[in-house]
Amino acid sequence: MKNNKVLALHSENQVKGNLTPFMAYAANKFNGMGCSYPEFKTNVLSNKNIPYKKKLNLLNEENITKEEVAKKFINRNLVDTSYACRVVLNTLSDYFKDNEIDTKVHTINGRVTDLFRKKIHLEKDRDENYLHHAVDALIVASVKKMNLLNGYLARKEHDFNDLYNEETGEIITIPDDKVFYDERYIQYIVNLKTLFEESSNYYDHVIDKENMRFNPIKISHKVNTKPNRQIADETIYSTRNVDGTDYLIEKIPNIYDPKDKKCIRLVQDILNGEDEKYLMAKHDSQTFDLIRDIVKYHYEQFKSDSKMYKVTKKKGEEIITLVGENPLTKYKEENGTIHKYSKKGNGPEIISMKYESEKLGNHLDISSNYQTNNKKVILKQIKPYRTDFYQCEDGKFRFVTVRYTNVSYHKAKGMYVIDEQWYKQEKINKKIKETDKFLFSMHRDELIGIKKKEGNSYIYDLSTEKGGDKYYYDGNSVEVLKFTASNNETTGTIEVKPIYTYCKKQLMPTVASSLEIKKYATDVLGNLYEVKDNKLKLEFK
View 1 (cartoon, rainbow, N blue to C red):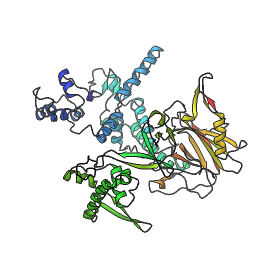
View 2: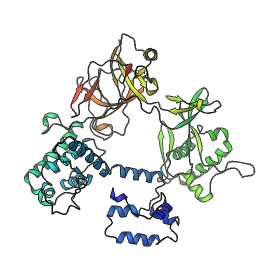
View 3: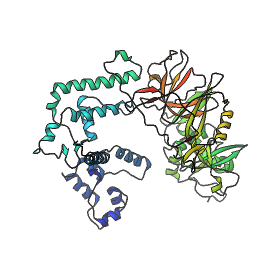
View 4: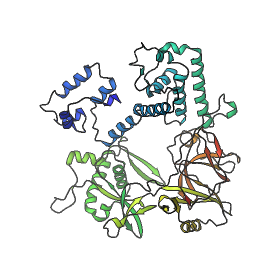
């Protein structure tokens, strides 16, 4: 964390506020208080006592008020493990000390695993799968267990500035190349790389278990079943009733934004004749015609430019896609903002625009908190707490979704409860009889096993988004996946994810006609087992 710390005068720090040094100088915050920015930059770059990363921080010239820059900054700091390492170190050290256990605790800086990987040519791809966590854990354990650093730690005369921090117990770097010629070390590298490659290929169905030198890396996932969680997203939405149907109303905050997806959608909707969902088109058509004319004029000018527009055909109709910059951005740069239509030409400027985004689905109505006329104010997407699966008399699988709004705390019982009458009615709504068999309840990230008829393709395999081979059910094997949520109770559709890798594509299988569905779990070591004898719980702690 030392790369984020500086010693500054209180007066200058107050003037700088939340700005970077570059932004503060650009805003003339330091006028009359010291050197100019070029002088400051020269001083920082020439100071040999300032680490390279700290120099980058001090001389950062990005606009940190922009959302995309702020996100990158946050993501960089989330992976800074130094503070977390110190907390864990202190906690464990205090535990062993208080219990008079003679144990020393060491932590490994994330830079060690990175250098180690590069040294053995085992690069990390976080988007490939979850197996890199296990590999990093093995590297961390081996650095100390294999005595690769013991000689350094034992030598008190050694300069620990670059290797070992005695105050925090943090190992900062790795020893020189001579340890890499140790025979044990070479064998360890071979085993580590083989384990990772075999495990990756096994989960991708490239090799079978009997052809592996090592057992595959096992993966476990944390499951949170606590009912006292946030029940919906925090964004407040307004609605409009159109021909008896409620629609969510969302807003484009700045129609001139060069890259905003909502702005791009506005341009494409205008060009493809699908702009009736914009409220301005309905209630102020003359102003909307001004925007429409600007967009269409731009298209006529640049339609032959493949870097600006692309035209494809779908069901015999041409579909225009904007691939370049928002044409309203260029218009604003050359002519200023668009103004609302008025006879005198002095209407207010147009910055934002509202539109009907989608039909109103699961929501929490909070209209009573606001003064509204003929419209609702809602919180969108009430989060599901759990999904209860049943096997019905007709052989189909159906489920009941219990959302956080359906769970309440009963103070007298000291338990969370689901209303029994509400639950019975939900079963009736889903065509689940009292005699139908309850199978199990699924919370987010619990494991569900699905068996389908022979010849059906797997819900997830390499072909899903990596372009690999398809994998098919043999009528006996169960495909185990992470359960995310129920998606459509009418069609029996749920949403799942693979257990060993990331998947950008939404996987939404229909389980109604599956041969079997089962619940699975893993122990702390990742050993998979089927969960049996599940009981329906309408009261729980």
